[in-house]
Image (cartoon, rainbow, N blue to C red; front, side, top):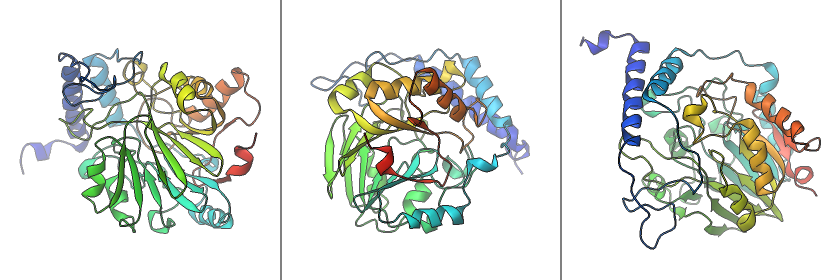
Length: 363
């Protein structure tokens, strides 16, 4: 056995975390590229992408990053409240009972099944245990709302960016129907699907649209970043989505920090009937401010884009950051109340819950 094989598993994960932290820190010290000639602001001349003007930047030090990875290595899964999850058998029965209606089903994290005009849309597919390569990475502490092998036939897949907790290779590879499923992704993320047998792949820039079987999908700006390995940072674009069908307009935020871009999203693509808005993974702020909103910022973002109602997502599923596991939902509802939202405008779903869209998207 090698010396590395004698290192306890937790220490190995801390060493890996410190290495990644160091690489992130050094990457932030490199000289900044400039806007690509003839391209929009977020296109850089070195082939990378960047966030919209006015977006927050990181204030994290190397020590902040090292301490964060140490805490993550020592974190233990929580005790899940009984009212946070619907048993899979009950979730499946409720989903099937609404088969003739437009619905939203929360599978956990940023994964939803949306039934729209007889088509089924799957967002940010992450339905296996580990959000990382080779079995390493953050782990789910709640099973998917519906098991992968009981999903209905998928017509459209939407992926906001390439992080492992939003784009899970095992989930993507396991889905049947690759020859007919349409995939909509931000720029340069299409090869991930083509290499896995998908044929109908649409790569869109921010504010570009595609119409698939009467469902219009528009990729929208978000404040985040992309990476799946050590050397591919920001080589693929990230974003959110506008999903329009049957007279309804639904916003999916993907992962995002907060900035002035969302007022522009409203002017160019809003308003929206319903927002599926990220509310988790926000501590520590020195690291997360540039890529994840707080629940209070999520409320402001929903107002900025002009959404009538909002459902909190991207929380209560996988071990990611430092905030208490079930704090985001409570803070989101409290912030909505403090902002003067009417009762029911903000909603927290149970994992596995199916909601009929007609009352949620009514005026």
